[in-house]
Length: 212
Image (cartoon, rainbow, N blue to C red; front, side):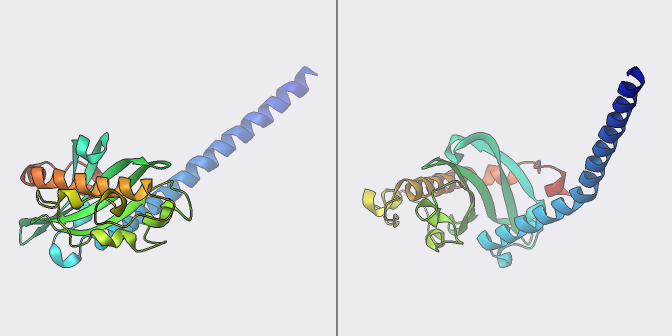
């Protein structure tokens, strides 16, 4: 009986070691491919919110981290800095709309030096399908309504959904979601308008995958 128990224990140990080895090998072999896919996705999004003609540097590799309540999170958020002829010209900044209907909504906003928004996209959300998910470009083109706009002292009151007296459409049966995104885009743009020069002076500290 004791010999049988020892034999079974040895067999289980061998299988456990083998399984661990397979998992480790799979992770090792797929890690680089995952990184490649992540970088491709990042480049795709950046090209959507910042037209390539507005910068001549490697935008995805020129990244710094910033923190401010206007960005909707206590965590540092990445900013991708675009230069043209060596001079600051445009940036793409991630931020959070913390007050979505089903939780936080992550967005990215491209902004030129004059404060003009070059593009906005939703990076992640959990909004209700058929209602709040219309913020996603794959569902509707609502998110394109921010392109070309600015946030100024004169038009701050227009940065609301129409139900609240602003210029942006809400969705039938879903006002909370677009209201949250409009507010986040407005505050993100205000942050950039206030801190643009300081942002471009910061060290590139997003991590090796961005700053190689």
